[in-house]
Length: 61
Image (cartoon, rainbow, N blue to C red; front, side, top):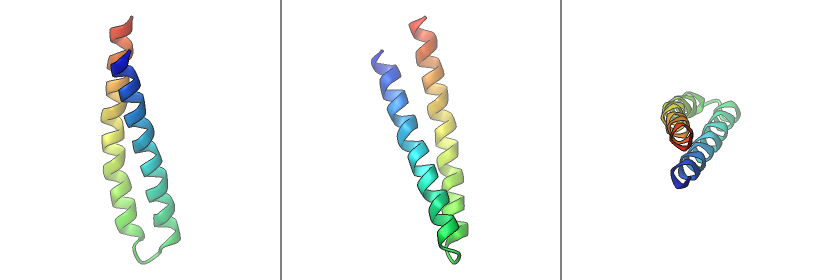
């Protein structure tokens, strides 16, 4: 259960970061590409975090 909560918290933080980076990329045209690239990197970590959530759920069942 603890692993599941940790994985969900990590996924939530990463999702928030992705949303903020995409928003910053839309607002700042000069630096937009950088923010979009960082959002892409954060999405990669988000996929890994999602895998952790799935693994933790499978371990509970």
